[in-house]
Image 1 (cartoon, rainbow, N blue to C red):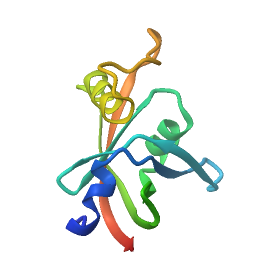
Image 2: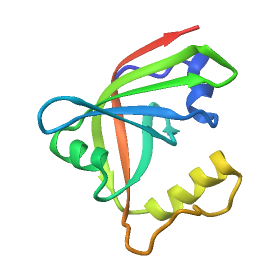
Image 3: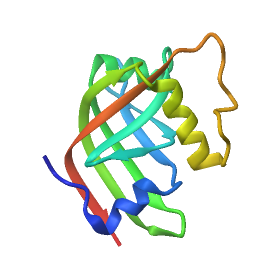
Length: 131
C-alpha cells in the first residue's frame, strides 16, 4: 500500500477541503468537496446516507481525492484508492470532530434528525504530490 509522504501529511491533517471524485452509475465522474481526516495512511471522510457519493461508493468503491494546501495552492496531494471500510459506528462523533477541526465548533451544526452518518475509510493505491 502506498504511504502518505511526511512532506504532505499536514495537508490532510490541516483544515484543507478535499475534493472526492466517485463514479456515477453511467461511469461519469461526480466530485464533491468534503472534510477529510487521516488515520495512519488511510484517508477518512464522513457523509450522510442517501447522498450521491454514498450511493456511488456503495456501487463502485474506486475513488480519487485531491487536496491542496490553502496557504500554497500549488502544493497538493492526490490519492487514488478504494473503499476499505464503510461504517456507521462512531460516525456521529466523527462528524463532530471534523466540525471542531474545520469550524471550531464542538458539534456539527447541520445535523438532521433524519440523516444517518457514515464513515468511509479509503485505502490508497496511488499517491501523487506536488510542491
